[in-house]
Image 1 (cartoon, rainbow, N blue to C red):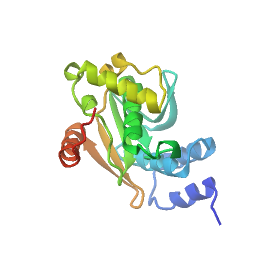
Image 2: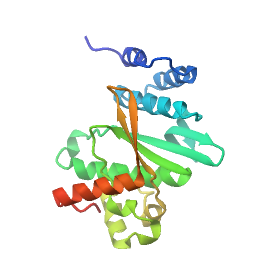
Image 3: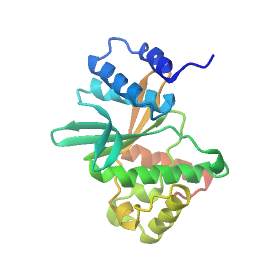
Image 4: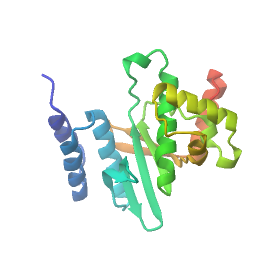
Length: 210
């Protein structure tokens, strides 16, 4: 018998030993929204637990400048934002999952990165981060023609007419959080780690990240 969204989350919460009472509030918030699948919801809870263990304030599904940020963690002088990416690819894009996910990652970086001091994307620990090489460079080093190609890719898969070259120039990513749901743990990769991983992938696949 298929379990309900609420039952899946309730059972999942049993994995946290000595949980911070604030995590229970976050669980209730996530469970009440019912606007996401259980995979996404569980990832949000694990990342929230990780940030709470670091002594940070944590809010989920928070509105910021008219946009809904998955995880918002404000501290004086250090406002952090995290967007969750499960790696789901709709059936109509199953012929090009890498490009679809590259467009998804790029959109998140452009949309949310400039709103916070530090921005991260949380991915499943078995998923490779499909991040274009141009967005791993400093803004002044980004090539305009490659950014234009990236805009075309984003509009092909995501629409997102508000994302343009100027927005991609401002786009900012500070690292990746790899979420292990089996162990309810988060492994943190800073930007240098992500650059190194991207170089390895490019070398072995021959794929140039836009």
